[in-house]
Length: 336
Image (tube, rainbow, N blue to C red; front, side, top):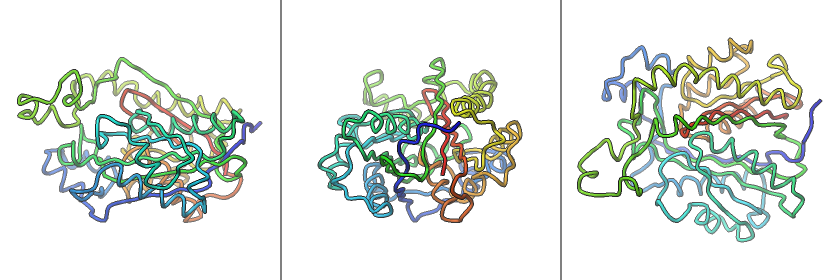
């Protein structure tokens, strides 16, 4: 029995830089074999200008969401910034800048840090705030990422990252895209398997860290562990997240009308859908190929495109699935 339809997505917005970079060309520069690139599925990623930063892209996405949802910025009660990568500054938080820039002066604002699982995690927060009945009616989730600045050729351990921003406004009583449930799994033993080492307190900026490229780039610290111990649980926990979210609203994989997954690896997506018994044509795989991966906003861009291209209809059950450094796996169930 479907339950907890207390809010829905009233507006979504995005910003994607104009510059497209070929993943095959990036792979050549970083020494990644072509067969690995073919398995990833994406053809290009976007690259921001030198003077564009995560907050700039997040602000553009937030303004786009306000326009698309016909929402007055003064009606936004809460802003949750969900940047997956390195922000403009270590301190202060980014959400305050966005609140001021978009004119949402009635909103309180804060950041969360959950990697590419950030926006999905914030779905639960948005629904929770609205459910409290304390006058919070509109919650904006927003993010911006500039992976090109702290990765080598946009990549880290054969995953390619693009730049861009995304936003979604959850509104009380709105009927479209109602979040029904979420399931998030964290395995902290992998919390620093991928990281940017320098710049914070453990490795403060110094001559030594500046001279080491690895200290200021997003890298895997233990490739052997990543390709064995972590790889063994990565797909099973993605599947566990989906099944857990569906179970919370008494649904099965066979009830899913549309499968919306983070745009990082086509082969992995196909494996998961096969194990769940969901046909690939009911998925966001085509958007992975068109847009590539640019953070936690992937799943919202896919949803926006599926609505725009009429791949989903009212009443459909939609499953979102993503994962992020730290390390967490997350799934959410929506009804359109």
